[in-house]
Structures are given as C-alpha cells and as structure tokens.
Amino acid sequence: MITENPDTDIRFMKEALRQALIAYEEDEVPIGCVVVANDRIIGKGYNQTEKLQDPTAHAEMIAITAASNSFDGKYLQGCTLYVTIEPCAMCAGALQWSQIDRVVYGASEPKTGFSRFAPSLLHSRTQVSGGILEWDCRELIQKFFREKRKGAEK
Image 1: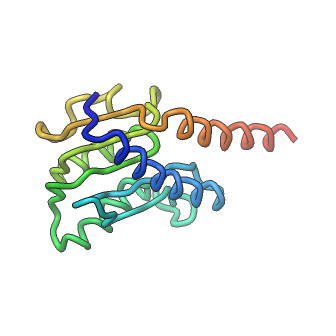
Image 2: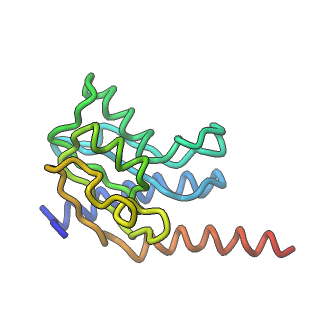
C-alpha cells in the first residue's frame, strides 16, 4: 500500500472518523469520508442512506459531490479521499469517473469492498492505501452492528 505521509494520513482519517461518528449518532452505518486538496478538506460526508431513503447516499458519494461543488468541476485530480471503510464497487466507480489521485481507507471490507469484486475499478492513475487507523475504523462499525444484533434479540 502507498502512504505519502503517515502523519497527514492519520490526521485526515481522524476527520473521516468524526464523520463516521455523526452517522453512528444518527443510527446510520458509521462510515465517514473527507476529500482533501492542498492539505485542506474540500468535501465531507457520512452515510445517510436511511435518513435520505437513498441507497446511493454513501459517505463517499456525498463527499465526492461536495468536493466537486467546491472545485466547480467533476474531476478531482490532485485530491485524496479518506474513508473509514474500503469503498464498495458503486463508490469505486464514482471515484474512477472523478479521476481522484488517491484513495485512503481505514479498514478493508471483505464482503462488499471494491477490491473483492473489481480491484481494477479505480482510475489507472489512482493510488490506494489501506489500514490507516484500521482498528478504530473497524471497531466503530463492529460496535454498531453488535448493538443492532443485541437490539434485535430483545
């Protein structure tokens, strides 16, 4: 995996985790995302599929839209996307079309992550790094689903 600057990656992954906590507090699957250009967040998002009743309202999709609006264009060249969980194929497809330079994720997603289904889905120039604050990212999502299962047992 490619890591440009571990301190920078950790700093922005913490911001993605803050977004995931908002999702958690809103009873959404806790995945958060930020898009960074020139060491500045230009887009952020968290899962809102329940709130918006929209299956495409993933953290990455919301952050990509916000970043594109900030850039006033559809291409995110020169940007890095930080997301707490490995993107799904839908989000990876959107990232391909955005031509983003780099994707950094916290924890891999063996069931629905893009690398399982379409590892070459991202743009050929996009660099991918994983495992940044992996434990924190994985623990938050596992806690969410443990609580959901516990609630379903009652």
